[in-house]
Length: 237
Image 1 (cartoon, rainbow, N blue to C red):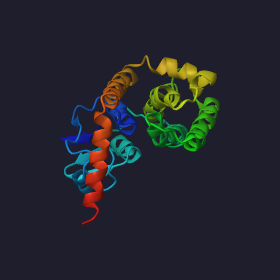
Image 2: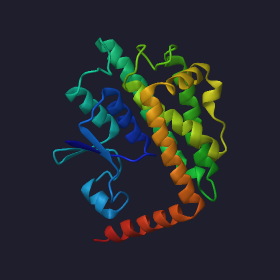
Image 3: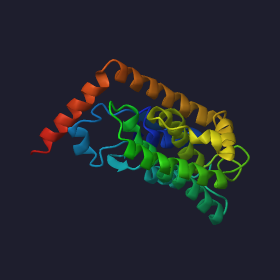
Image 4: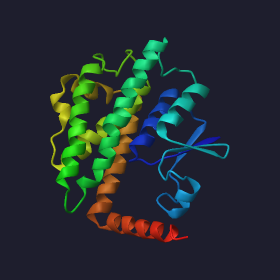
């Protein structure tokens, strides 16, 4: 059995989980690695991030690589196009979600919990998010799906990306740009009602609430400090 190392609040993991749910892949176990955030995790998984797909002991990182791999070995139901041009469009929308929106949000998220915010970082990364939401507004489908009129890998990438925009960006002091992008806003309302997106969003919200509680009670700061100290000590070797 394959195993996906994942975490509720990891948006990159959420992308793969949504694909797994949509394909009905019961043969993939999903769990959080017990040593995540430790030097041992970095030793076992050099990139140091989740998701990681364990395929008979071969550890495959990077959500886009995992998503493409799963599509190749489990082609039914297909989450790509029926013709190459459709597939190219799906992959383009997925990259907008994954790289142009989510990567900027991932780097920006630390500012949402910083005691002293760096306004330069917020303006730079937040500005990119706003700009790319506007670009997405011109590209996204008008029928409740990202493209092709059905659930595809593009939706799997966009759902966690837009979750981060809606739930994290306002905590940096910036306004949620989804509300001003009519086509994206309509899509976001519709896609959240679909079965597999809704399931993934429940997990993301659960992870967010757990993180917020850890921040409120001071545990998260202690965890981060310990992880940084352990990593610094390990890198001395």
